[in-house]
Length: 168
Image (cartoon, rainbow, N blue to C red):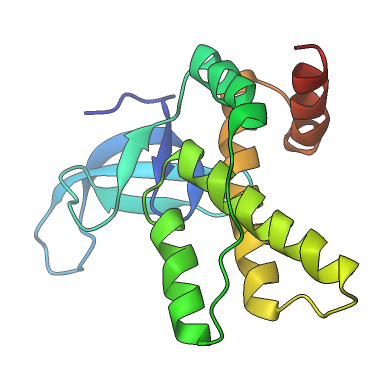
């Protein structure tokens, strides 16, 4: 069970802070259950969810040390761009990386799509909307968790990664 103040990953919302743990009647039927009240770090709303919710993925965010180790592995990653002309299959492939809720998979997805974008630009070809949407989503989730773990602003993550890789 998480504690008040903990930072967790909640489904595809990203990083949330546990702000309260108390009984609530989510269904309005008088049946109270113990709930987490979560505030997403990068959105302005509150989520209430049962403590024993098994339908939505929840885990603690990675530690600062894990974030730094993950960033240090980036130069050694060899990720290939994924191509599929069937848009449904392309979306399913990308979604499978998002749905693991693992930073390492988000990095691989981001690099894969970024590589694809660079290749298409060199060929003067258009970058697809699905590619763009999933690249932004992977970046949003990844940078959100890294920012929280490293205790830096989200908009500083790209520079932090670049500086850390450059200093290796």
